[in-house]
Structures are given as structure tokens and as C-alpha cells.
Length: 440
Image (cartoon, rainbow, N blue to C red; front, side, top):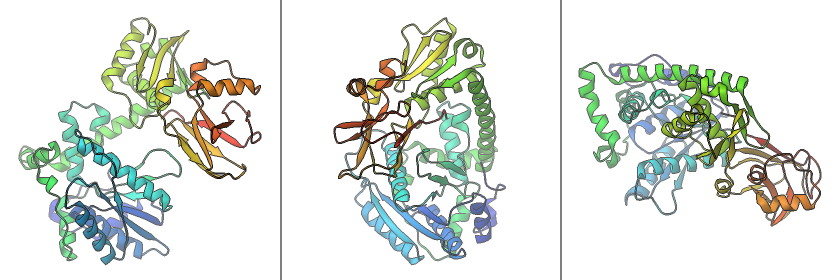
């Protein structure tokens, strides 16, 4: 949601008091990070964030610049951003995107890599809030991009001023205090401070859809579709999304059940009778939670599952986003596919650590003997089930495929704990806690 009233581009440079009001409304911690590309928008954000921190005892700012390595000039530009940060009295880190780059969808891949690198850096530094420089025109451009792709309410909703990055611990929020501020006001503030921003040539490359839409905004403004109007529409869509999400959550509480085994059940007749938008949202929530994904499944794929439910059944079941949707008595059961769970990355833990495995389970390791190499959470698998049976652990009355797709704690190759009640093999009862991530 927007953090203040719409600002016009004729108001001049953003005043520090205006920025402070916007940022304080988001309740940031004392230690914050700023995503810094060195361009005018992120430089304006850093300038105001540095001033904000200087007025607060014990506050600090860390600037983070990602070197994607996609252009020869990238390393020099990252170094220049660091010099700008230090000139403002701000600590700075350059994060490099390593590895092979994709040949298609490079902008999306770079964005995902950028967020992942900055999130890891924030958590390592004990920072819970990462500030991003998205502004009014960014909001409008995103709305148009998604409109061109035929997005529904969710896609057309405004970028949030504050949201959790990934739901993992420790918590990290993405804060956007400039969403209602026009680009021109940010550029004016940078110029007034005597700073020279970098210019990314990709921002002028018309091969990218966002660049083409950006250049179309002045023409759209002439017929009443200016950035502020588009951003208002996005905000109203966000309000509609919030209301629909509330209804979906209420429906789930009345007709659904999430199990301790990372699966879920939903009453088939109630699902078939629900309005399309609510039924599809419920299926999306279940697919995202049980599948451990950051994003819900595609609308067209969810529609096919809903149509099958309404037509009388799912037959042998449908697979989607690493999940299986199948009939189970009066319910539709949603379970994690074992083949998909095999691709989950191991989670390294030391005693006292907590983390999320496969996007589905939060695991806490309490007191445990210190060991070189620590412990890891990995897929239990069919082999792990055999080990538990041989150890005399009572397994719940749940299909083996569901249990095998669950996590377990290992020391090297040795299985030492599983999430079945208080059962543990090797380090004592209650030392490890496995909790399924709630439906989200």
C-alpha cells in the first residue's frame, strides 16, 4: 500500500521530513540496508536513509550493490556506487552474481539473484529491513506490464510498502518508502546534494518491455492515464486482493485442514460450490504451501484442477508445482510429490540454529553434541523410513509416499531424528522440532 498521499512532480526535491515520515510509518529497525545500484533513484534513497540514521542513536545503514557481471562496465559501476556510499558515511558491500547466466529471461533471473544475494547479506549482518527505491512511476509501469499480460487482481495489485521477503528466519522485510514519490523529485534531490548518479544503458534499451512502457507513459498521461492514476488503480486492486485473501482464509478455516505431515485436505463439495475466485485462491494457497514455492501455481493450471473437481473427480490425480491434487473420500488431498522433494537443497544446522527446508518445514535444532561439519536437514526418503522402522519408531497411519517426502535430521550419512511426534534416533527426545509452514 502507498505510504502517503500522491505527490506531484512539481513539488521539487523530496524533503527529509517527508522521507522520515514515510520510513517511520513502516517501523524499521535501527539497522537497515539499502539496495544501491548507483542510479538516481537508489542514490536518492541512500542519501535520505543516511540522514535518517544520523538522527537516531545507534542506527546504521549498509549499502548493498550487486555486480551481475552482465556488462564489462559492471565492476567499475559497482565500485563507483561504493565510493558514493562511503562519501555519505555509509558502509558498503559489493555482491557478485556467480555462475552461468541464463540465455533467456535474463532480467527476471538477475532480479531473483539480486534479491537472494542481498537477503543473504542482510541476514549475515543481522539486518531485518532492506530498503528498495521503487517509486511512483515504477508502480505505474508494473501495473501496465501486468495489464499487458492479462493479469488478474493479484497481478494488478500495487507493490507493497512493506512485506516479508520469504517467510524464513530470521525475518527479513522489503521496505519501499518512496512508492508515492515521482521520479523527478528523487532526481532533483540528488542534483541538489551535488551527487552524480550512474546511468544504466539497459534503461534505454527498447528490447525490454518495461523501457517501452516507460516511454509510453507521457502519451498515456495525455489521455488521463498518468502515473498517479495508474498507481491509484493498483492500490485499489491491492485492497480487493486483501479482501479476497481474507475470504479464502476464512473458507480454508471452515472447510480445510493442514496436517502435520506437510499435506492438506479440503472438502470437495464445498470447493466445487465456492465462487471461482475463492476456490482458485484456496487451491493456489495449498499448492504454494504444500509445494514450498515462493509463488502460487499458474491460474490456467489451477482452473483445470477446479474444473476436474466440479466435473466429478480428479481421477488418478493431477500434478502441479511439485504437488499432487487427488481425491480422498469427501476431500481433495494435496501432497508433496516425492520426486519434487528430492530436489530440495539440504539445510545446514548447528545446535541452536533454526531454518526452513524445502520451503515447507521450519526446523529447530536444540541442544545436541557438537560435531565437526554440523548437522543437516535433508529428505527422509524411502531409505529413511526403513531406518526408522528398523529402530522401532512408530510411524503414523499416513501413506509412505507422504512420509518419505518429509525432512529428517542427519549427522553425515546417519539419520538421527525425524518429525514423528517426539520420536528421535540418536540425540534424545525433543531435541529437534519440525513444524510445517502454515498455509499462506
